[in-house]
Amino acid sequence: MRLLIMSDTHLPKRAKRLPAELLDAIPRADVVMHAGDWVDTDTLDLLEERSARLVGVYGNNDGPELRARLPEVASVTLDGLRFGVVHETGPAQGRERRCAERFPDLDVLVFGHSHIPWDSYADDGRLRLLNPGSPTDRRRQPYRTYLTAEVATTPSTGPELSDVRLHRLTDG
Image (cartoon, rainbow, N blue to C red; front, side):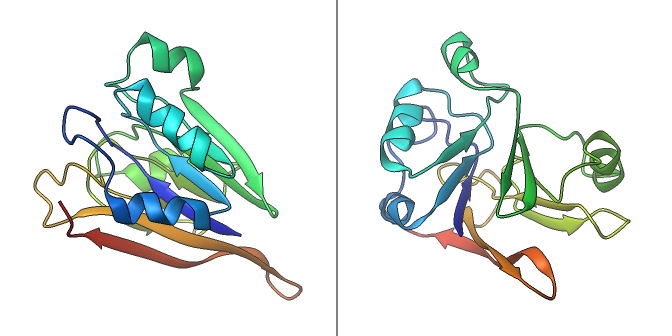
């Protein structure tokens, strides 16, 4: 199962549209995840239309229309792997501990807000935390980014997240 993970698109304030590379990748994904700060409903409509399956949440910059259509926290099990999606997780220091305590039943937590790519494990080695950065607003980062990953199940290991890749966007 192929995943495409993004956050903090901030359209049309930070960019006029999603990057072409990202748009081209959407149809190849079985599941698209968006960790909030869409800003406009047009982006939600676009992703709902183009995605085989969309899992999204609202962020702190999303108004009443988006909050009416999206949850604050989303949970989904994909081929036996338990995912959560949320926008904010608080400061970087102590994030792994806080998230493991807040989401004890998850295997992977996707989050956004900082625009800083993140890939770490909680201290117990169980919960993986992923932040895709932003495909439209790099802030203090060298690149605009998004993530792809795969969920694979093998008889010996069961479900696992594999081939997690951070994509650096260089187009417009």
